[in-house]
Image (cartoon, rainbow, N blue to C red; front, side, top):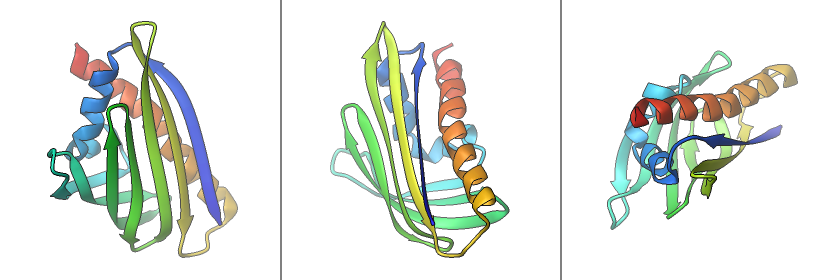
Length: 145
């Protein structure tokens, strides 16, 4: 059962601060509780992360994932290459300027290889979206203070 979620929020920092945080994928475990590790295994020609290995623990499952990242001046997107527990995953942050701060739109879609009760899957999806918002806001405030 594929699940998806999205959220939009404003952060009182420049969009460049948000993009700097997203580019620092190896720091994901510092602000995203479910991420236990993140390692860049390949970079694009400009030095931005291209292929990343992450370990994620959520809903009682730990998943080792390989993700391919794509970057623009105001967005970060990724797609699952391989994983233990997921059969697919796509995510995207889009960051724009708004009232001197940043407006962030986050989208996530994932499908599990194994069947879990719908309630557990929805709780995990909600936690992922919640972390994307609260964790990123907290990290942006920490880095800009």
